[in-house]
Amino acid sequence: MKIPIIIILLLSCAVCSAETKSNLDGYAVFHDLKKEIAKEKAEILAREDFKNGIYRILVYGKRPIPKYDSYTQYLAKYGIDCYPIAGCIFSDGIIGAAEGYNGVIKPLLVQKFGTDIFQNYKNQNENH
Image (tube, rainbow, N blue to C red; front, side):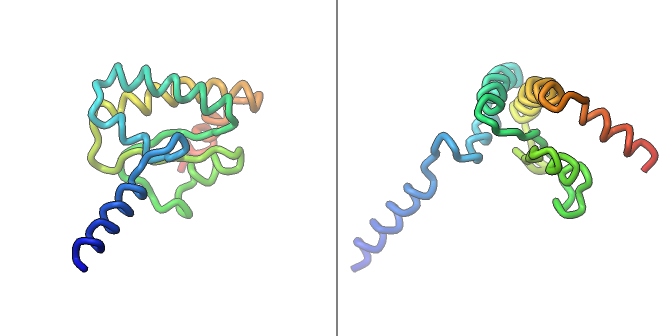
């Protein structure tokens, strides 16, 4: 009886952890990469996401709870997801991924919306 249960558990774990193209946890692949390689891969991903109507900004580090995070709320008004790819512990690969992805997606979003929404947020919050 124990063997079938163990097999079922192993199979269910394998299915649950299988990555798909739409699985956002795929950003974890950047963790072990060198910064420049992660940056290059993230730039490609950003172009693909934009082309597919997926708008997000990659963030890392300790983040506020989303309902108290004014940046997350601001971006949501434009249909942009503020997507954390790492918490307090991050690597050069994570930094490179965020820099590469955001460096490509932000100018595309500015062009899409016809105004620099990122600079607007910064200007609105300089005195806070």
